Amino acid sequence: FYYIVYGFKYFDGLNAMTVLIVAAIGADDIFVFMDQYKLSSYNPEVCVDLKTRMNWVYSRASWAMFITSATTCAAFICTAVSPLPQIQSFGIFSAFVIAADYLLVIT
Image 1 (cartoon, rainbow, N blue to C red):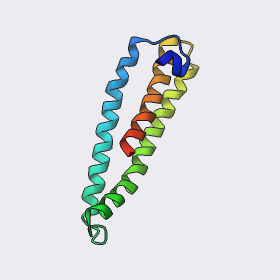
Image 2 (image 1 turned 180 degrees about the vertical axis):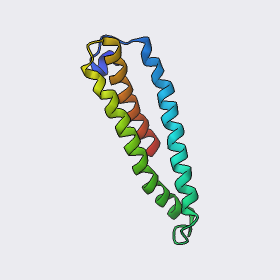
Image 3 (image 1 turned 60 degrees about the horizontal axis):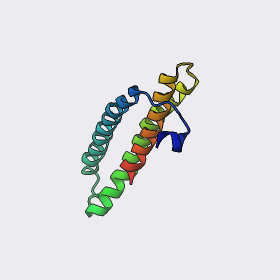
Image 4 (image 1 turned 60 degrees about the vertical axis):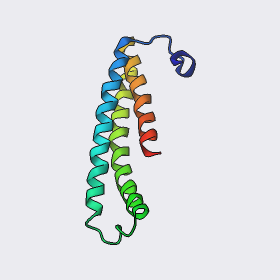
C-alpha cells in the first residue's frame, strides 16, 4: 500500500510511532472540542437546540484543530530533506497520517 500510493520503497519500523503521535493529537482535539462545548453554554443564542450548539462548537473547534494539525504536519514534512531514509520515511508517513486524521475528525 505504502509503495503503491506514495511511491516509497522503504517503510521503517519507526513509522509505528506515528500511532502514538496521532493518539496524542486526537486527545488534544477532544480537549479543544470539549472546551468549546463548555464555552457554548455561556452563549444563550447558541443553546437553542443541539444542532445549533454543535454547529457553533464545530465551527470554533475545527479552526483550532486545523491549526494544530497543520503545524504538526508541516514539521513532519520538513523531514523530507533529511539524508536519512528512516527519518524521511517517518516524517512523510506521519504527515500524511496526521492530515488524514484531521479529515476523519472533522467529518
